[in-house]
Length: 174
Image (cartoon, rainbow, N blue to C red; front, side):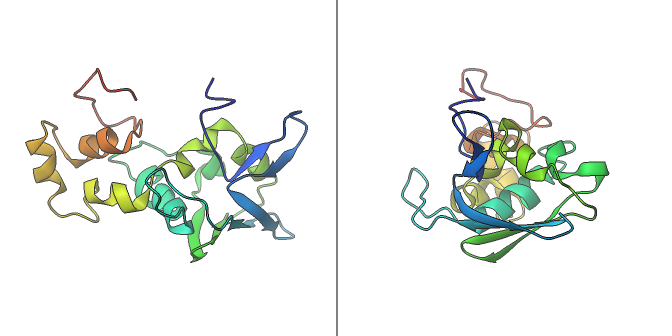
């Protein structure tokens, strides 16, 4: 089910599964050496609470979640070919850039797959209050809610299935 209806990526496979098409990103460019991928996000795309989805959400997901060893051991492999992570930056609110050290011709195909779903399901404006980088009191808040540390708190509130955070509430739908 997750492979067909449970995620909205920057790009997606078309209905026939014969190619990729825009989704949250309305367009993209690829450098001639297939190392730099720049995505232009649709204006008006919003989170369920009405806040805008921006390039900063993508950068947060990559740099503060995927690349954070307290939440995930190694980050999704599609963002680290040959074990070197992509550099991800917000050019502006609606433009995000991925830069790889080496040619990565399969990136668009991999990005359209379910393996990229965590990239677009972690709203920075909401989740940063549970992240130690943005909230120095996150460990204290975690203890108040019955968690060992901020990473468990983050996973619980941001519904992110990190592989290093032990879940306290087995009845929560992750």
